[in-house]
Length: 271
Ligand code: GLN
Image 1 (cartoon, rainbow, N blue to C red):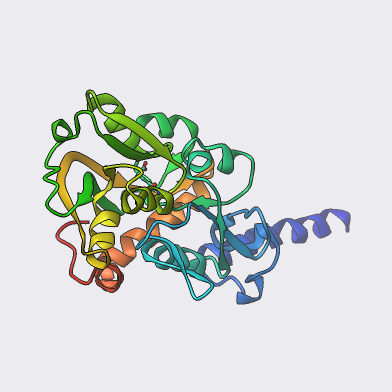
Image 2: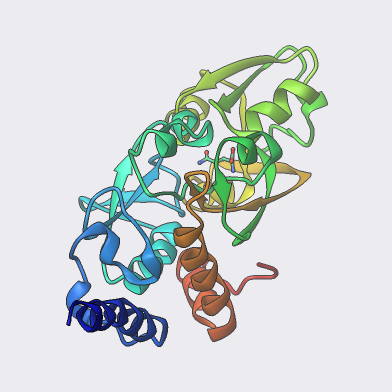
């Protein structure tokens, strides 16, 4: 009696696993408990995919009419869709994101912040496969002729705290006064008010800004060959797997190109 009962019970988990593996899991698990999301992903808040980002970083993430929108937002929305949950965005200083502190403390499941994959960061959290190519660039007043860091001798160059751009400037700018700003909005405001002569940041955001701020220009790009990745807490392989699957699928399906065109107004040259 007892023996056969335990045998029946032992069969149930196997059947459930088989169903889950076949992708037949009930959609009722959507928005349910954290552990019930597809792929065995555990989320910091049940039913939500919480993403840390540093606003504003247009066109990757920025606020418009009270909503956070952008390229990264669209991409992570697709990850959330795969998990049957909705994305919730947490705006937090970029330095806490890139140091891994926010992911480590369970503030968010993912970090999507136009963030460059690099070795220091890789020691502190895990990155998805690359989803975007970037390089550093210099922005200043039109006609100022800021075609290189050597043109900024004796001048003030704005950098954004914790970024690869700040690092690049620290390494390569000589006889230039570096002024650190907390986020991209403050940095560009510094350029507009003349608090700094120029600013360094990623090419995507600066080209986007000069489109709307036509008194300014991107004087040059530096060939830093960066790639953006989405961050997850160290060892969260289940979630990262879903992120990587999403990236691969959107690239293959043409959805990536659509999202790219929506935010950059042209087709991607590379991805
Ligand atoms: N890509 C840059 C970096 O990772 C800037 C990112 C950002 O400011 N959001 O440092």
